[in-house]
Amino acid sequence: MTTEAPSRKDVMTMANRQHDPGDDSVAESTPKKQKDGTWVLRWRFWPYNGKAALVKRSQAPTKGEVIRRARAAADELRKSGGDHGGWSKSTPVTQYVEQVSVPAVKTNTRLKQNSVDRYLIVLDLLVGKCGHEDHKHVDSLSGYVVADLAKFRNLKACVLDIAATHGAETARQARNILSKYVIKKLIEDDVLDGSPLAGMDIDYGEFKASQKPSGGNALTDEDYDRVLDWLLELDPAEGVTPPKRGVYTLADRVAKRRNAIDTTLLQATTGMRVSETGTIESEEVIDNRQGGVNVYIPHTKTDVPRTVTILDDRVADRLRSLRDSTAPGEYVIGSPADRSKVWDRYNRNKTLADFYKEMAAELDIPVMEKSFRSHGWRTTLNMIYYYLPDHIRALWFGHSVDVNHSNYRDPKKDLSGVMVDAARSRREAAEKAGEAVEESSDGDRESA
Image 1: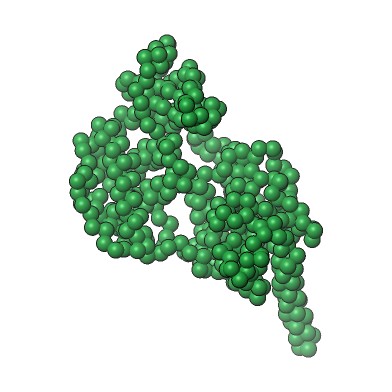
Image 2 (image 1 turned 45 degrees about the vertical axis):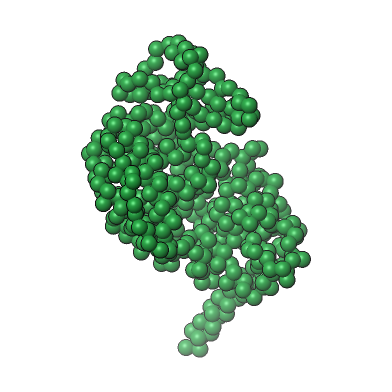
């Protein structure tokens, strides 16, 4: 969020009454429509340390949205203490990043959502939150206090650590984000006097990401079936405890766990990308002629819409019920706290990463803990149904379609018959194999 000097009229409007520390003037301020059609709201926040009110500016495409953004920004300031007058050189860096840098990124209305998501990931890397088993990030800023950020060698070591594990380009971005959203904020909060990065060169070398997230790991047929069975039997409320503090409720926590279950089931039985699962609207969940459920995906990574079918009858019934309980204006798998909003990518990915570790431990599938992430479902399904024609799988998973298969580009082409028959055949074969083993065991016992 940027700060602009208010007009005299704005100052007079915002100063009409006395305000206590923690107050904001969002409700007293009037949004103004700009020439380009956007709306701007100038408002103030009164910090807890008694200093002068902070002048803030929110911008959005609609009048209602600009008010919502301003309220959200004011709430973030209240949570973090306003102008952070309590920060000192002994403050842990992780605490400052969490309470200042992360909110600053989230409330920056000039950033596109993709940039917000990327910046939050890089902030995590700076404090050693990577999620990759082999990346230790021994030179991260975790464990440091703010005073340690005044030393250039500490910052350089952190950035080069990221270069070695995530590539030079990510390291360059890490330096910029460290400078703007950590060091600069500390200067604004009168904790640091200047930036150690100013005018200093860092040789990033030619590092390439040592472990690019990949879908190269697949589950075996047996593990795949065990995961589905476990997910379908899981009670989202079991083991969830009420939060001790904060704005979230027990119901929100249960909803978040239910989201993790539903998202994973949907990916495991369709091969959808995780980003595609969170924007499904009820009219895009369609009953097909085989008695199952299709999902139409209009917005994809490749900008080519497609239709997929849920390859398990039990999951199809679950999503059908979820669709029928979705109110107008809500997403089928929306934000746990408010289904009318998309589930925040940062929170979603963290929740799913923890959920995968839980699955790995409960089901004793090590690959799910170390290197299997949501994209792995696409690889798993590709391996399970490898015998199907490649053009069907290419269209199904939304891969780039070769010109030789150009006649299969129709995104509304219904492949449910082919794919569901294949899925049912696979499950029937597994059940018959299991029955044969049991009969053989019974025969051996009778002979004995």
